[in-house]
Structure formats: C-alpha cells, structure tokens
Length: 169
Figure 1 (cartoon, rainbow, N blue to C red):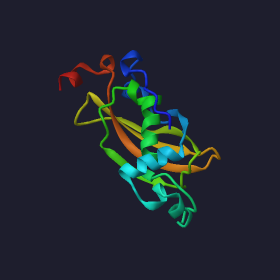
Figure 2 (figure 1 turned 180 degrees about the vertical axis):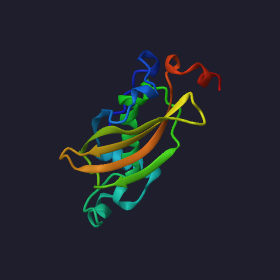
Figure 3 (figure 1 turned 60 degrees about the horizontal axis):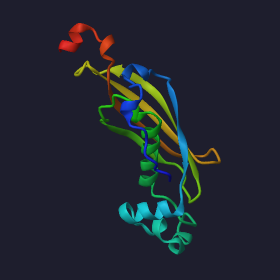
Figure 4 (figure 1 turned 90 degrees about the vertical axis):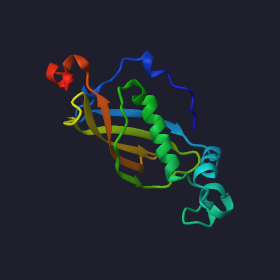
C-alpha cells in the first residue's frame, strides 16, 4: 500500500458535524495491496501462517497468502484519513458497532472504500459535539465486498450555528 504523506489538515477547509447529514456519501479512494505489505503487517501484528508463509497458506482454507483482517481495517482507516478525516473537527470515536471480513484480501488486490452516513445527531451531554453513525464498505477490483464496518464518530459542531445557550453549557 502506498502510504505517501497526506496534506496537513490545517491547510484544508475544516469539516464539522453539520457537513455529515444522513445519506451523505464519501468515496474514499483506493489502494493496491502488495505481498510485501501483507507479510510485513502480519509479521508484526498477526503472524498466523496464512498471512506470513506462502507454502502454509497454500494448504490453508484460503489456498494462498491473504491479508490479516486487521490489516484490511488499517487500510480502511488510512483511506478515511486521506479522503476526509484529517480535514474534519473529529474528536475521536466511541467505537465500532459492527465489523465483518466478507472475503479474503489477496496480494495485488485493489481495494476501494466508500463511507455512507446513516445517522447524524447532536450529543445531548455535550451540545458542542455531534455524533455521526457511518457505514464503510470496502470492495476489491471485482466489485466484491471484502470489509463492512458500522460505527460512530464525534465531531465538533460549527461554532457559528450553535445557539448561545448551548455554547455556555
């Protein structure tokens, strides 16, 4: 995977909670995963034989070397950062509700990510923040879904649209 440095978020227009209404879709780009990247990630974080040893992988359920699901998640995170997240007022995430590895990722696969906003609402406990529930889908070069995730993000609300009493709270 090409991990060229991104342009710093400060050089872009900042996106706030209001920029993520339900139904909003962001195409997050794509990347091609190499054998070397699969093995390097797996050696460090998930050294199961079908991720690091081509011979053992041939005799596995997968029939060949495959990327760790955690590697696939990491690639999705990088694509999110490069496509939009580094330009936002993100305050982190309370977590992922659903995560599915739907098909194995093989060396040479080109992975494309799309984010769809499912729900967007202000936080009752912190009115200067909003919650965004998103669905991310990663597909390979054949259009097959390889990863599906659903989770929440917390974003600052645009200061100029907050009612005065909410800012003081």
